[in-house]
Image (cartoon, rainbow, N blue to C red; front, side, top):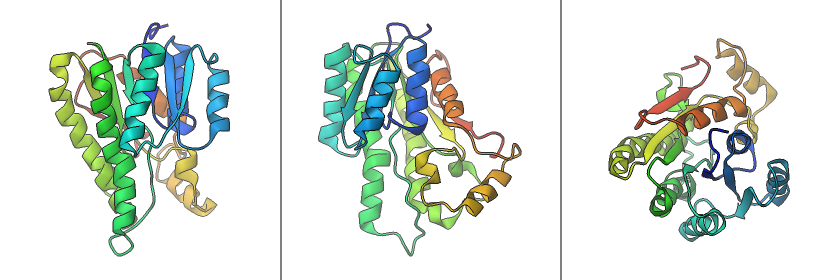
Amino acid sequence: MAFSGKVALITGGSKGIGRAAAEQLAAQGARVAINYSSDSKAADEVVAALGGSEKVLAIKADAGSMSDVKAMVEQTVAKFGKIDILVPNAGLMPLANLEALTEELWDQMNAVNVKGPLFLAKAAVPHMPSGSHIIFISTSLCHSSTVMPMHLPYCANKGAIEQMTRILSKDLAPKGIIVNAVAPGPTETELFMRGKPDALVEAIKKQSPFNRLGAPSEIAESIVYLAGTTWVSGQTLRCNGSMV
């Protein structure tokens, strides 16, 4: 029960990597607040599976809305009193090269993938005691030489996340808050699989020396690891099965 007495807030926590992280942290004693955008059924399933409303709080909110981001923090603190582990996991991954990119798409992605995580951290930090952790989510595409033009806005967003991780680790160190990021490779989540034909998924699997996609639980293991570190800070941990 390594996280007994700890409180985690995870955006996008009802599915995929966020849900897997919530499950693993709860299994080790943490109380967990999960944010979801629309699927209340999935969120209710997580609450029931992880011990009910005494241990898990489900919060419906737009992770790209500044008022909703503030409300998430306020509801978590009202319920559990503090935040020890912050995982801004919610994200959007539409594909567009320069020709296809629109200002509307850019603004939508930036709000959820960059602005939301940054201002979530800003809202949470006053409620995070010394020894707390922030774990941002990047992507191994930021480090891949085979990245495609259609990943332009997503990689731009996640590149910002990695720089935020670097700088905030120094900014928040005097408060005793440790900041890191996880950069997953292709992972079998609803977000990743959405809109991809089987042939494309199989081709992506073959790029891995393990000939498969990662599992959400495997990415969650890295999140849990970083949530327990004391001297690893300012780092982006690539979690991609040797693909990158």
